[in-house]
Length: 537
Ligand code: NOJ
Image (cartoon, rainbow, N blue to C red):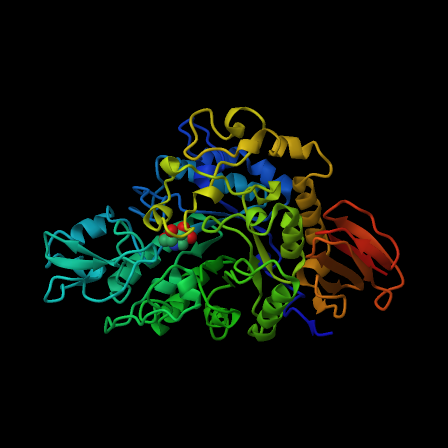
């Protein structure tokens, strides 16, 4: 049995022991009746977040934007979209959150701006404009076709022709999201200053979007075709993005951004990564630890719900973490179908059990604490450009972005108007109010689990040991600190499974079960899909 000892457990920083919670602001709480969530709505729900027990809220983009990609197309990095409120509302949100000991993390979108950003409007106004080189412009090939075969992450060529100035511009995502040229030092300065604008205001950190695309190869070489069965093929790509993602100079920019964070105290630097395996996460930590505090780890999120697979990924990750580097795990966000749907509803509490008891920072996605599932969106109501552009694949992200289900009133208490995406049909049964009233609800399961994680050091920074020999359907591990030993055991199968812990302990007490069962003794049976957290003697 191999044991991992978290480094620096004596004096962990706030984010090492925190539970993060992502809010997709359009869908959390509307306070104006326009059918779209806003900052005042979040303020109105802060007490809910405190009651849930989370420590830090990451809010997807709230900046001025034409909303071609629902905020990931920013037209002013230093203001708030009027749909969400204004700077004064934001300052109030920050103050109200801080008064409740909640941290606020914003989303920074450095790779691209909106095509309506004044910088791009200038850049496209003429070839000799001072901001021309703030974006990536290239001539057509002699036959008029794009400069190379690079494709957008959202499908189609990554190049769009500009009639007026007779050149193509590059966009790793939508044509409405032109890529900024990070090889231009003026762009770097302007973007670093945008970070400072918010850090000075008191935000506690940033999640940095799509960092992998930040720098492209200088020679603009064609990308090779994807290998059959490869990671990129699974993402619907025809070409492996060898010259468009994860370029060495990109890591240098991660370090430079990090230095901006370090001008302030106790800010957290989180990166949206995309790597084929956990080894790909390591360079994002920096050498030594001068990159991301939390390079988002999506590996479990893309794995099958299968005990040996999950164990292998966790073990591979722990094995190669750099000294002092802290692991993290994600199971859901606004870009992936909800895990209650992906893994089957019967497993959704076990996913939470895993996420909140592993050694590593957990990030929750709003509504997962209710067991929210994907909502089927009829074709005519679909709005996600990725899903609309790539209709042949399952790429639409609307199903996981539907309004939070607060209560049984019309539109689930999310809005008094027409919600921008439909509310789940089951909202009258599945909502915060009904689950608070039910002791054995998923919401109360989460609250207890988060409370246990917060109150037991073993769960956030205790030593971690896999328990071997319990069979392929079970995943079990020990967490230990301050003389306390906890054991987590997850049953991945749809059959009951006997568990024998007599080689580990003389007695075990159930702290929490996904099924709210109290097991006693050292041998017991886990129900199908049941997971338990036990205190060992
Ligand atoms: C990743 C974000 O999470 C996603 O929602 C967005 O569409 C792309 N980056 C482009 O910014």
